[in-house]
Image 1 (cartoon, rainbow, N blue to C red):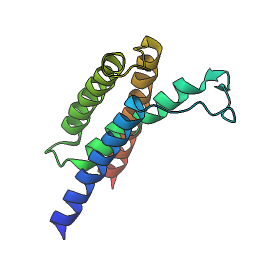
Image 2 (image 1 turned 90 degrees about the horizontal axis):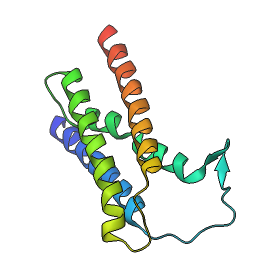
Image 3 (image 1 turned 180 degrees about the horizontal axis):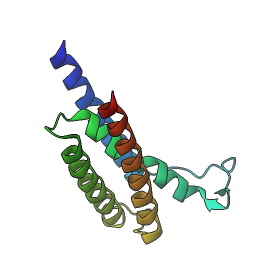
Image 4 (image 1 turned 30 degrees about the horizontal axis):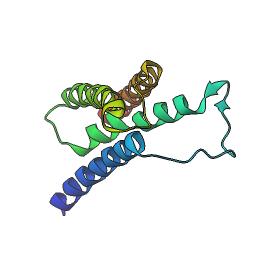
Length: 128
């Protein structure tokens, strides 16, 4: 049963990464019912923020490292590499996407908040 849960967590994380890649490289029709801004922030930037927010949390949970802090460090580095790589590849492998530094900033901000949430979860687990 323990092996099942380990594999399930890894599969969930990989499905999440695949979904982020699909959102980064997919071609979508504009939907006029979606507002252009949310709280005066372009909707596109909010989506980028939300896409990458779970990365450090799910990645840290998925892989059993010897240390929670080591896991957070590794997942944060991997999240930032993924965000940077996906953003750079968008303009190279698609014809409709461009590399946008503000998208990358939104990705990094989402990763940072995800890291903060993961740290809070880790501290709460340690106190128990």
